[in-house]
Image (cartoon, rainbow, N blue to C red):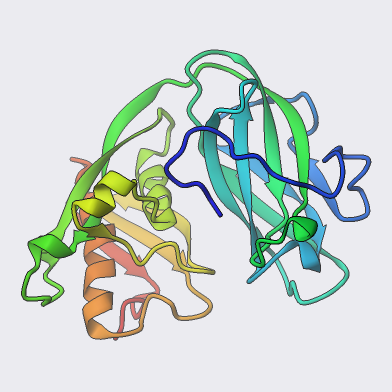
Length: 260
């Protein structure tokens, strides 16, 4: 369970202490190293045994000293995860801290069973600085604004988020959109999301003469299943990008990405 709508870290039962030395035969982190000063976006790299993953990924969270969640992300396997061997992984985590302090990066074993005896985690102490933020909008489909269920892009509407102030706000916004995190209040108002989609990642972005080109990785074809769904996914990404005044047009790589 992800506890999407709570800023408080849920209690987790683990097999042992979560210390790096205890976990060295299960998961190893190259960066960040313990007690490092981390900045936005926090780059996470390492390797883990195949059984640490499920569907090629596992969740990552950053919490402060009081257990308040500062940010979360998904670590993705860079290789075949159906193995008992070590598999490289990588992730980027965007976090928001109100003041400088100490915290803990938590890399959770993906545990679809929900069984306590199958749960595990690695905890890495880190230091962070205060995060300056900016307000943005993420665009999601609102079923209450589309009573005819026509999958109208007009029903793709904004929700507001505060994100860290970085040099890549457009990419940060798209990546946050792809996580598909909606609050209970937003869902009650009719907002829904097809995101997150396993394997779908924003690989790069290039803005030139007002034309934003977004390059995606979609190895399982999750962005091209059904004309209605594709139309909404396209609109969510396009509208999120077009909120930035420097973006006049959005293009995608590969060009056939959003084919029904």
